[in-house]
Length: 260
Image 1: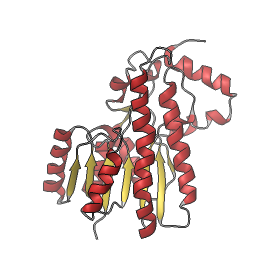
Image 2: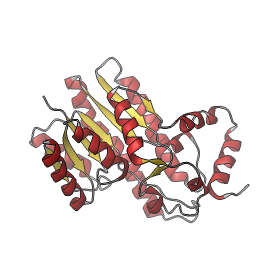
Image 3: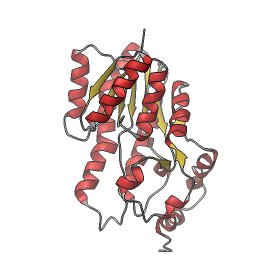
Image 4: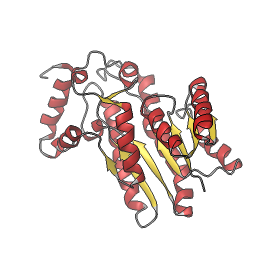
């Protein structure tokens, strides 16, 4: 029996690369994104090239009620989701005193609320059927406080903590819960976040396809925490070694060169 994967933010970046890999391996798909034209194009390609069934849902998961609408639509079609990929998300660069509150509230809706609600809706069915898995796309920044991206870092810390807790709660079943924590990745994230002035961009950037490949293989193996790249895995240990204020100053310096 073919399995079905639901991917949010499937129109580009890591989400699209993950969709490519699931399609290549014959999974039926539910593609969710705001860009209807793009996901319709992907759906046609996947259907013609790989012979998989693709359901397209052109909606913004940040809009209140949309996750429930997605769930209800799939329930009516008796389309059971075996794997849920909570990939949709975005960031915002700048000092908290100067950034736009509306954008930050929208970020919380996408990065936290939508992840929580989608998981709340689809995970129980997986546990009842005793199969499946959830991948939440967090970030390396989830390990660190983030001056000049304070809300974004906090949202990804939530996703990481939430995921690790759920993994413990479903242990003993055949359902897995995974956090994918990439470092800086070549996607449209930097432009949307307005990170053009950040010194972070001078670091090593990983291709989205490489991140997706590592994430995809690790997810299907049931890994709880996936950090693509040896350097990133080493960096993830730094918060355990440094005092919190020193760690925060280090991140601030990495963002803008300030010694504040």
